[in-house]
Length: 176
Image 1 (spheres, helix red, strand yellow):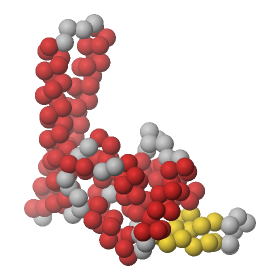
Image 2 (image 1 turned 120 degrees about the vertical axis):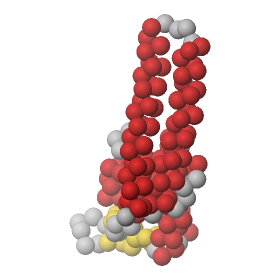
Image 3 (image 1 turned 60 degrees about the horizontal axis):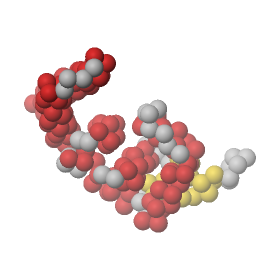
Image 4 (image 1 turned 180 degrees about the vertical axis):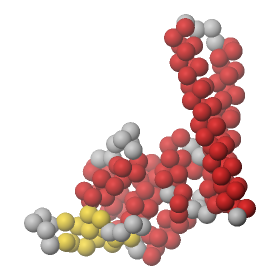
């Protein structure tokens, strides 16, 4: 999933909760994406224009406040596209750049999709852990570099443990 497509996914998912004007949408997206994902108006508005031109959202002028605002609303086509992106449980959903975004919309996903994404993410991290362990064994670097690498390995292992708990919980939910 490219960055532009990820932003479109985030916008469509956010608009599922109701219409929003640009500033409000940016605020909601920033909360969704977290403080480490800076979202500028310079990337938001061109993406909104693309979604409008594709018919995924509509724009309507709201003159009820002291400032003229454009309010964006998701269309049926946009809801379908969001659902298609939401149900994509393939490798794009497991990547570092997009896993958190997919996870943010897990409540709207099926248990099967959630489990597939969680298992895929875990598999990706297991591969990374194996490479990190091998690197730690081969590398004879200074103490600080070694500690940084060890910290990275512990972070991956911590996330894998977290994923194991989520996968287990999803399995219990599917059994009920």
